[in-house]
Amino acid sequence: MNMNMGSSSPPDTSKSIKLERYNSYIRRLNSTKLLNASSKLLFRATLLVALILVFLFTFNYPPLSATDSTHRHLHAHSHYFLSSSSFGAWEKQVRHSASPRRPNGLTVLVTGAAGFVGSHCSLALKKRGDGVLGLDNFNNYYDPSLKRARQAMLWKHQVFIVEGDLNDTPLLQKLFDLVPFTHILHLAAQAGVRYAMQNPQSYVTANIAGFVNLLEAAKSANPQPAIVWASSSSVYGLNTQNPFSELHRTDQPASLYAATKKAGEEIAHTYNHIYGLSLTGLRFFTVYGPWGRPDMAYFFFTKDILHGKTIDVYQTPEGKQVARDFTYIDDIVKGCLGALDSAQKSTGSGGKKRGPAQLRVYNLGNTSPVPVGTLVSILEGLLKTKAKKHVIKMPSNGDVPFTHANVSLAFRDFAYKPTTDLSTGLSKFVKWYLGYYGLQPSLKKDNHLHNIE
Image (cartoon, rainbow, N blue to C red; front, side, top):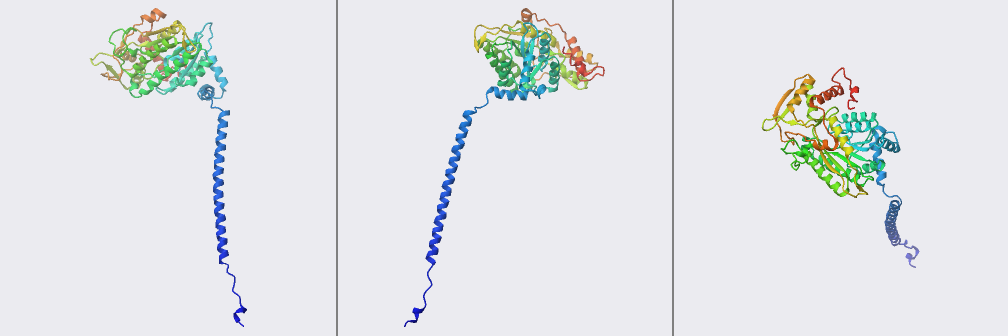
């Protein structure tokens, strides 16, 4: 009997273990593939749902209209006096300021209303019963606090100034929607001959683009307003004929500022010709007086003389004195109001010309040029202080050696006749200056907020 028959071998499990491992691997692989496929499907479904939602939202909630965006924009700009008021109150203030108080009174939009000429004209219009709404961007070309002081003075006389820019199309549209302006007195501009060499783009933006934007708004208004706007004596440039006449050539500007003002006159012709806008350009000659511009010679001469600083007095290359036709602010205001009162209505409607419209240009000056040296002598007497003068040749910075206005056209058409000589005008300016800046104990600053009256 075979003894090996009594013991049996253990079962072989290695094959089953390997099979189980293989099956487990297959299950994990399939699970991973399924998970990846599910993730891709979920991502695509989510993307599709998102696109559908965006489409539905856009369809049901279109972008804000120009009026809606203007409402939000105007809330930001009306903060100076009405920061806590509703937009409806802002609209009420605009309408109230623009409403005339006399029969057949004008309704005037004054651009640059916080500026020198603009503030004086706004007050004069308001005092005779016209409706006045101001617009100003309060830029920092010169001390904005002076502009804010003018604004505060006008506010006391119920003249509201909207803080905004001429190139803000929605703002202009809103103002024209709210108020049926009969006239625009466009005085907003980037001023100054010499500053153009530092910041030329500002002149193009304000004096050309801003003017065009205003004309675009005016041409579509119903009714179209008549427009009186500030050109400049600078347009005469290198002209040597004296006194300067509106018939003289103006195609040789000596500065970028002058070139932008000349461009404005050509643009005015275009909008008059195509759209029937009534346009009157006023060529101002060196305006001075209380509440004036600190960048003007008479203003900073006064400041420097009082502080004992040396002032530069220019001479021509030939050694002659530079002379200007200094024009007092009250005379300029009379000219501006005369131009407004004699302006004919625009003839367009719905942006289309219906007939020939008035197109005019006038000199507004004093008709008596005064050498800058004489200006300094008058200031010395008024300030009781000797000036430290540095006489130098006039640099090539855009200034011209001589200006002299012929105002016969303005006299003929609206009785413009300047009456203030330089000594009288400078006396009034110095009185205001000393009071406003508190340099004379007997004069208090607050008492001179109304010198403009």
